[in-house]
Length: 459
Ligand code: PLP
Image (cartoon, rainbow, N blue to C red; front, side):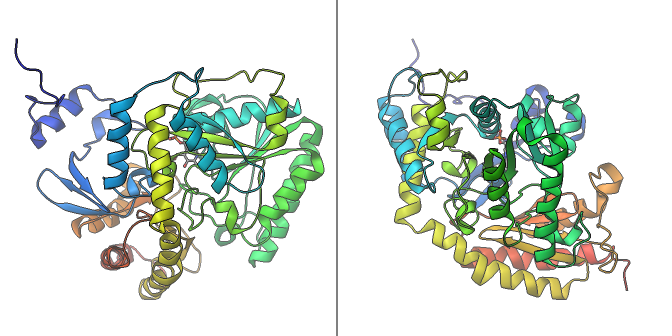
């Protein structure tokens, strides 16, 4: 008998061509026309960088899918994962488990208000899906209001709540989900001219939607505290508090989807902390353990928890509270505390990214607006600053998306991996990035934006 190797990939060709070939032969990728993609094989990653098989190193200004908040291969997180894997790798949700209990305790501790219980999931979509179910059962109502320009995940309920083109392929969607416009001062649905006006009009619009839909039919309002993929839309002053007030007035559950915005991304534990607003449910995933093992969850307040004391909650997952995932969450939260990760993210936003992006906007006519907080920023590119016509149309693909693809290619050529969405570049490095790394990435961005300026048609 041959001695079995501890490396499961031992003996399998590990050169770039082989990885690429096997991927193309057998892997079916998310959101993609399979024949039109050519995913870059990544060989290794460390800190804020990943490296391809040719040895080219990229500064990751996307944090993968805005989830590697703690950076790659954090030694303490890897050690915790290995240590716990050596002890126990799987326990069903029907048992109690030390890693799960401690993760729930720590997450509750950093969460605001009375959000003291955690229902664990494998990721973000299952979190919003379960929050939706909890709100309906808690209130006995069936409708949910969700914002346009939002993403809540790709399972049935989550994609139905989503307010962007990713929903279209799943329609007809779940009945009872009604979309409304949230605030977006740069492209106001309400023709507002100031942030204050935007808050006031967006809240009035929400009230109007509730009036015509019938408050007594509405279980929940779900929103991304800071809208992520759809534009890093930071709510103007007073908006979240206003939504909280409306929810209280009509007995509606307020669900904050912090899958992307939470766990340091906005320079706070949770983005709602920035405004001192306490939702009834918070959905989290991504940054809770930086995706070292899949994990998400719903933070539940006392009132909703009380609903399910004598009555069973009709929902569950084989891997709810998976011990390995929970062990990495425990380690990650401890690292966040010990290494000042939240403060680092906040300072990078106020002292480096914000001021530098403002200078970049001054230099490049194609930059219509920069906005964000913490390590969560958008650079919105336009053809004309006056008309604000986007550099590429909404939901552009193929030839129509060429200008954005050219800007992204210019970033990559300079060793910076950007995140792009529609006509925007998102500056979303790990929360652990150093000032020097961020400055290096912003310098690459500055140069790459010359490419965007070439398309500019304004005066
Ligand atoms: N909610 C938000 C705000 C997200 O950004 C995402 C993913 O990007 C999700 C939910 C879905 O998370 P997952 O892809 O882990 O299911």
